[in-house]
Length: 352
Ligand SMILES: Cc1cc2nc3c(=O)[nH]c(=O)nc-3n(C[C@H](O)[C@H](O)[C@H](O)COP(=O)(O)OP(=O)(O)OC[C@H]3O[C@@H](n4cnc5c(N)ncnc54)[C@H](O)[C@@H]3O)c2cc1C
Image 1 (cartoon, helix red, strand yellow):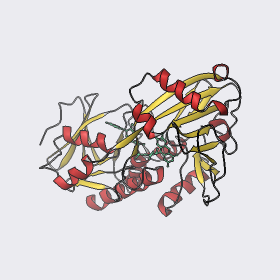
Image 2 (tube, rainbow, N blue to C red):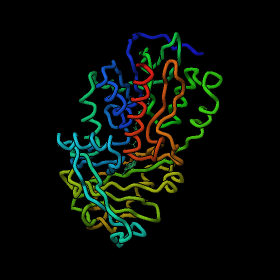
Image 3 (spheres, helix red, strand yellow):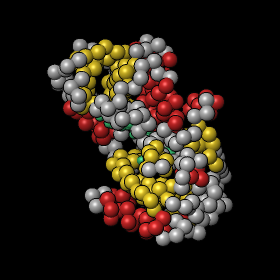
Image 4 (spheres, protein in one colour):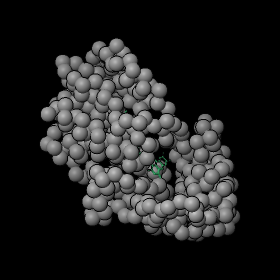
């Protein structure tokens, strides 16, 4: 088994959690509350992962997940606490749909609505709320390179030459990235059960472009400010102003998996132009006059193609190493949260 790279510093923890998206934060919150010493390592500058909110000029845009649903009791009670703390609130029960991005928007008559939730100041509000409850702050701007096992402990090495040693590990990055981390640390067959490795290695994600637009005037989208689109390059149009998170008019336009795949390596300006053209009818006036600023996010790992029907996958038991996240269950915020919680509980059972 590979040994970790030489470290400038090393630390002892009960559990190391890789990734501070909703799965990582649910796992670490559970373990932290149970009294374990938990360290969370996150490569980005802030927490939330794909529950992402960004400012462009004066506009605030959710550019990853747009809303979340609550079906299970465990996630429901976390959301209810977060609501009491004014971190989240219901947005609406149903979004209008349209055949193409040009509309018209119609209420889907054949669907029963259920609460769609949003963060109070954008989707990052819920991850930020969870992160505040940890006994140790999340270590941001720390990218994990490899995870290996030595002397019944997990050893992680990070890009900043830091190394972390712990009794157990929870990997919450999109699964292809977790596979790379494990592979680099020598945790692959024969050390890992080939069936487990096969299941993890076969996970694929679709990409997604998310275009944020700061507009001079409010958009023409109808209440509640979200439109599901059924064909063409656009899958979703969200109005961050109507949603109540942006002080000025702004839209988030999300492309379909097909469009995103096809244009993944195209010039960003070309992608922006195509998406703006596709949604021009919701902009009040000529796009060239009304769009004050743009920002294009290219999510490489947006949605798992075929989610795994298990809450998590144990890579090995001694020391415990587990993969969890939105691949396990359904590719949504709630499935990621439930998977993170399941991984946290599993670690707790094994560590005792
Ligand atoms: C454009 C888009 C729209 C979506 N819309 C919706 C929606 O409306 N409703 C819904 O329910 N879901 C939606 N989703 C899906 C939802 O966002 C995800 O299912 C959920 O947020 C995944 O959470 P996670 O914790 O599993 O993973 P992530 O949020 O991806 O968290 C993983 C974390 O790991 C970190 N990381 C990765 N590699 C490393 C490393 N080497 N070292 C340290 N840290 C690392 C990442 O930076 C990230 O913070 C959307 C997703 C996208 C991309």
